[in-house]
Length: 162
Ligand SMILES: CC(C)(COP(=O)(O)OP(=O)(O)OC[C@H]1O[C@@H](n2cnc3c(N)ncnc32)[C@H](O)[C@@H]1OP(=O)(O)O)[C@@H](O)C(=O)NCCC(=O)NCCS
Image (cartoon, rainbow, N blue to C red; front, side):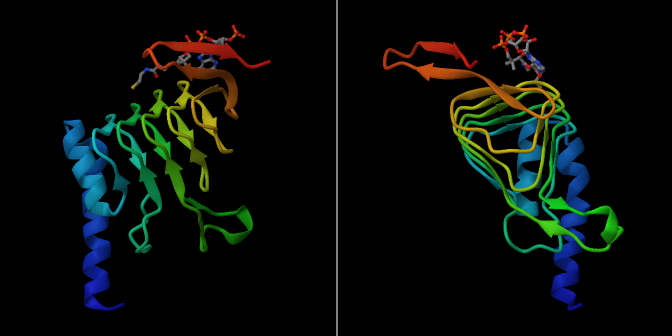
């Protein structure tokens, strides 16, 4: 491993505690950006939220759109390993979280998932499939339960999904 790559990886590892345990959201946002996570303006990241940007991967593995809130103790994963690999090899898939999304506390997002703009994910959900824009999804695994209709006058209506 070249020295430059070693320093890059070391930096990524050292930043993890700040990204997770930083005392204010702006510190957690800064540390995650420095690790390589792409984060839009006005994003709020809750305490103890872990965003999986493996230091050995140079490309951005998690994108978070502007105005989005990442809840307390969220886990956003971009890597996977199967039992047969014994953790020695990983499959990396990018996670994309849109703009103005709200993730409740303790949400887990699996590798490769895309969450559309304006979606709301309920506390403790396990998101293993894409969630369309402006949709409320809850549960393990997360299922859409409501459509969010944003009207031109600024009001919001929720339409239950059968
Ligand atoms: C998802 C959420 C926004 C939905 O709120 P809501 O639109 O008012 O939803 P409702 O209370 O009308 O619930 C609708 C249905 O979803 C279920 N539901 C709501 N939230 C749920 C959740 N987190 N997990 C599982 N089911 C949930 C309700 O039990 C209800 O089911 P039912 O129709 O069978 O009775 C809210 O429940 C939630 O989880 N908020 C996150 C709070 C949080 O994490 N705060 C800390 C952030 S750091």
